[in-house]
Length: 165
Image 1 (tube, rainbow, N blue to C red):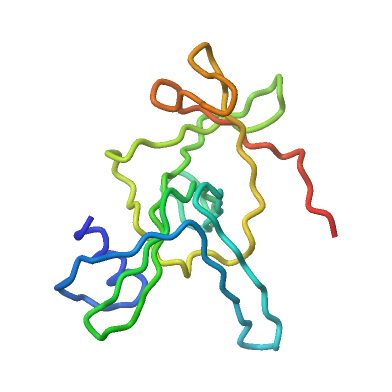
Image 2: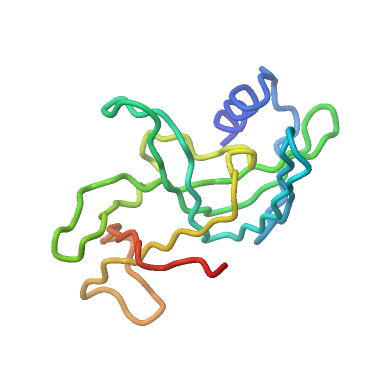
């Protein structure tokens, strides 16, 4: 965890620091405002553990920007060496599998914690209120409200939900 936290400080804040105090506080939710530099527009955002966020990024396989999805598994606050509190998210990333032609939606696999994607990221990667819904591909091991994600980590991205305006 310390190496990934150090990576996040370097990647997001351009600070190559030695983490002296590894004490973190865990939270179930956090709310904040995103301010636009050019206008006085502000967006209020609330995220909870379990929310699915989207992150723009670059893919090795595709040209241009792509959209990645991740599930928030923890929200932590770390006090850095300057006594500033920094908010980080511990993420479980979704890896695109394919497009299901019967259901007409994308299938994703929720990566395990030991896979090679970085898991700790600054809260600054969130640019809007999370609005994504993923549905577990339930099999025999699932019961109501208790999905077997140990043996089955496949989810469908539900594109049929909408946000009311």
